Image 1 (cartoon, rainbow, N blue to C red):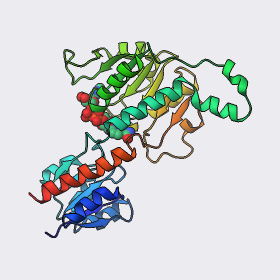
Image 2 (image 1 turned 90 degrees about the horizontal axis):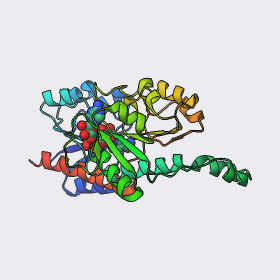
Image 3 (image 1 turned 45 degrees about the vertical axis):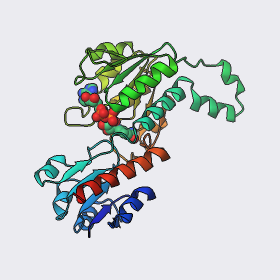
Image 4 (image 1 turned 180 degrees about the horizontal axis):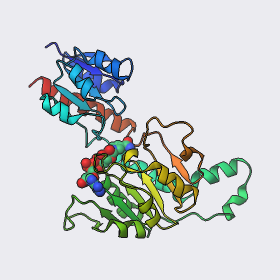
Length: 307
Ligand code: NAD
């Protein structure tokens, strides 16, 4: 066997060792610019890609020997699936590997926001112990969590919030039947969800139809005491609209792991707002989930290339 696997952005040793032990050669990438990807993919049989390498039409066409594009992660929005399909190239992802990590990250953002953790930490370090009497935090127990997108992550989050925190959970997903046997209430009226939830968490994919689907209209439906969490894809939210409602205090705050443009500009106005907590698209990147993503992607490559 003389197959080469191209890895534009490095992954955990476990995934690379799995491939090396089975006789594959590995080519680690030297950059993510289109020209670099096109040149480096040229003689490779597989590409194992993370989110930041754009495996677009030109890159796929440059991969003359390409047989599989294995995504380390879930969202396939950085891969031109249509082109891959036309060329008969397999596209895989690792849906089971990181759902728990993302659901836990969302809970962390929810706790951070509802307990004002960033603000009180900062104030206390400047000697302001009196901050304890200057603002209330919020109980999550008994509150309503609204989840948009009831796939793997949305459902896992629903279970954790309901069972672990005693939250009431309502979900919206046009592709999930309201009679589905899920342990949460499914609503078909998304406006109702936005108007009634205390925390809203987004778990839908970025596609042509979901791009910018959440904007000013939805934010203005929200209670002024409610929080928005986005650990799905930045592009599903109109970021300018979100910044505006946060600036004007129309909603209580937001926990944001993903951005319209990544990496975000360091002058992104979200970074100046006190009612926002931001994380660098690392919701899925626990050590455990990262090893699982690397292994699952490597196994999928082996399965395709070894027939
Ligand atoms: P999934 O495919 O299991 O679930 C997505 C759900 O969204 C599906 O049930 C689908 O029916 C639903 N959906 C599609 N369009 C919708 C719409 N317009 N309104 C409401 N629901 C809609 O995916 P998942 O594993 O649960 O992951 C969800 C998304 O989270 C992924 O697409 C990915 O982009 C993102 N993600 C982010 C990270 C991170 O690090 N922040 C990690 C993993 C996944």
